[in-house]
Length: 417
Image 1 (cartoon, rainbow, N blue to C red):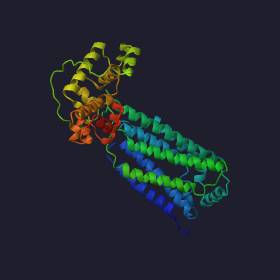
Image 2 (spheres, helix red, strand yellow):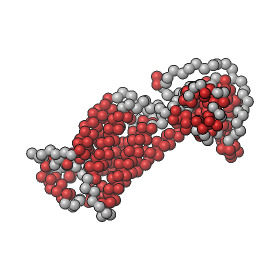
Image 3 (cartoon, rainbow, N blue to C red):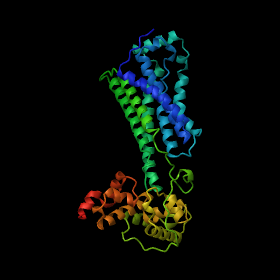
Image 4 (cartoon, one colour):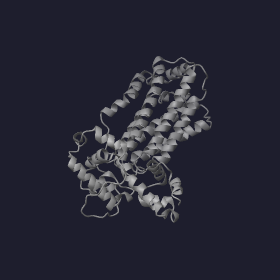
């Protein structure tokens, strides 16, 4: 019987493997957004197998249980695809897996199939192969698979981060506050996974170039995976429900929305243009793009678009819906008795702004007005921001500086308040 000896790195890996198994069970049992949670559960199982293998080899358990030899070999081909598919399904709770998604699993399945001769070996044969690997004699299939794992990991980490970045910009077309829908923790997950892959690539390049021999490279990568599992355990199960960004065709289900404050109702009169001059981006857009092309998809005529714009500005000035921090494109479209798609077309073509920038512009101007009125001497800037509809201090600071080129505190000092 082999003597089980583990140092602190291996102990962390073992605890990570155990937590990964329990986390997988908790995620699989969650009733909300099941597709995404089950994908993350599968990711945790893959991580747990790899972490358990670190302990398996470190403790010399292959001498006692040789049939588990090679169990973790194909797992790296699962990390990238599963995290990428999880990001897709977490961003869109209505998305279901398709046959096309199964193509992401082809490298994993190919590795399993080509490795069948090894998996079907006897225990003695597996031990002989393990000693061969330890001596530096690597079979061609394993030698080919190792760099392909790294390539796969880097590619999937890259496209996952690109998708999350695009998603962050896309939600601004439908949300005025993006704290709950920007998938920030998924960006953290994707970045952490990318860092682990970068570490693995670095170790491989250093050893391949003969610069140095990384004696415990696998242990450090295992440590990174363990930390990732701990992070998912802490953040993933506490992540608020991620809503699907709204479009003209899809709306957030009623049971997922929160109560909105009552807004004034009444006929919408034509409002004058805002005092602010039109932005250069908007002028360029209107001059370069024919009106018919701008409204072709929504079915709006120029006259309809102009009327909707006037109604929009009237509602924004009269009812001040922007004070609701959870205001969405669909909410505002409801107030105007139109569709989110048509309203989005008017915002983009007539006003030259995303929904996010348009609504937050009103909030910034409200804070400016109250600073000029001396309210900043009686209440904090955060209180002014929350009253204006901002959902958090961090968002307020970023948006205010974007619209005024000054931080809120600098603006208040310049105003002599």
